[in-house]
Image: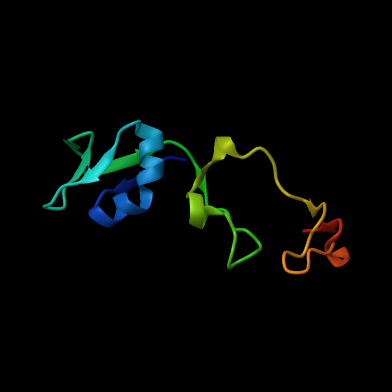
Length: 103
């Protein structure tokens, strides 16, 4: 489903990665706050892909969408059903309570 986003200075900062993915253009903000796509002014963009925000289970140290941004739907290849193994990063011991745990 396509959705439209009005482009302002703060929305371009938030959506810059997916805007550049969809358009192939470099987005910048001029000193007067105007949004530019390869130097051409843009007021809005209609998204043509669906995106997902992913979260890791280690809140303080996860490499998830907070780190690398939204994920286009076509990049998702599967869904996690269970934890195949788990190692405690502090003790370096196997965590049997999480072994093959379904989520």
